[in-house]
Length: 490
Image 1: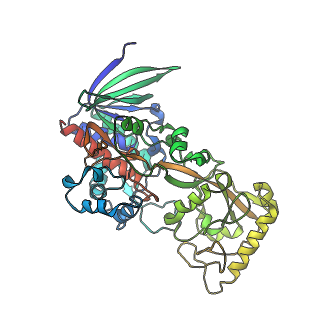
Image 2 (image 1 turned 180 degrees about the vertical axis):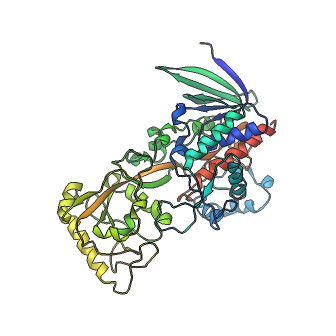
Image 3 (image 1 turned 30 degrees about the horizontal axis):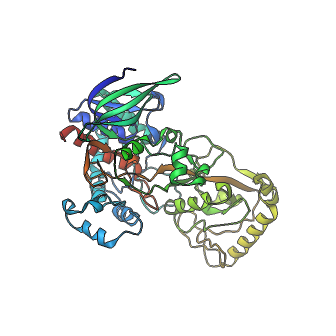
C-alpha cells in the first residue's frame, strides 16, 4: 500500500491548549505547520474545550505566591539527596542520571513560573480576555484567573489565529508512531486518517510536537499504570475520551525518558449520574460523606474546598465500588449560593427520613442512622463555634473518628438529600521528561532532536496536583516548543 506523505516544518499532534499554542507560536516564527487531531472539527480541543481553564495566578502577569513551592513540594517521591544536590549547580553540569530523574526539575518549575505571565499576555493578543470570575469553590485559599468563555474561548481564539497564519488542520487523524532518521532524530509522524471502517495511513514529515494529552481515555493504560481500580474512573469531560496515550507511548518506544507519577492522576469529585462536562460536587464539606456501607471514612472539611477536594476524592475512589454519597439536610439552604458548588444536572436523591434515603441509595438504613446519630452527638459538643459557611469556621465535631474540622452541624432537619460522588480522572500525571525548551529527553538526558512535548504529555505532577496549572502548563510549554522548533535547526 502506498503511503501519502505531507511535508511541513513542524507537525503538531493534538488540538487542545498545548497543541494550538505550539502551532500558532511556530507559525508566528515562519514555520509551515500541520496540526493532527483525532476528534472531528466540531469536537476539537480535547479537555481544554470543556474546562473553565482556571489559572493559578494572582494577576495577569504573576503566578500565585505558592506556585513554585507547591510544585516543588509535590515534585517527586523520596529523592536521593546526593543526586538532588546537583540541581543547585548549572544545568549543563548535571549528570545524566539527574537530568533523567523522575522528578520536577527546579529548572523546569522556574521556567514554567517565569513564562506564565508572558504567555497570558500572548493569549490576550488573540482577543482572549481574563478576569477573576466566580468559581465552583465556595471557599478557597488561592486566587484563580479565568479566561472569559473558559477553555473553549482559548481553543477558538488560537484556532482562528492558526487559520490566519496558514496552519493546516487534519481532523479525524491519529498519530501512531514517530519516524526517525538513521541518526535517531525525529523526522515526522506516521498517522492514520480515520475514514469509515479502516484507517488510511499517512506520513507527516517535519519536527514533531506532541500535545495530544494523557491516557485517561485508554482503559488498558489506566489499568496498567493506575491499577485495576481504574475501572471506577472516568474522564471528567468528553474531551478526555480522545486521550489514548499514543503521544507518550510512541516517545517511550524510541527511548524517551519518563517523568511524572504514572500511577496517579488529578482527581475531581463528580456525580456519576450526569453526562454533562465536569459534573462536579463540591458541597460535601457542609454535610457528611458515607460509603456503600453507610459509614464515614474521612474528614469532609479539613480546609478550604479548593485545597482539599483532591485528597478527599482519592479516598472516595478507594471505597467499595469507588463511590460515596454526600448526605445533607435542609440546612444546606443556609449556605449562600451553594449551587455554585454543583455542576451536576441531576437532582438530589431525597428522603423524608434517613431510612428512606438509605433505601434509595441501597445502603444499610441502620448503619446510616447510627452514623448520623454519632455525628450529630459530636456536633452538639461544640458550643463555642459559630457557623460561617464561606470561611473556615473551626466549628468541629468533638471526639469523632474520623474528625470533621469545619462546618460541623447536626443533620437533623429533613428532608434529607444525597448526591452520589465518584472520582473522575481529569488528567494523568505520567508523561515525558522535557527540558526548558520543551525538548523531549532520552534516557541519557540528551534531547531527542526534532521531538518536543507540551501539556499533559509532559510529566510534571506527583502525589497532589497543583491546582489550576494544567491549562497554563499546556499554553506555556506549547509556546516554548513552537518557538524552539521554528527557530532552531537541530
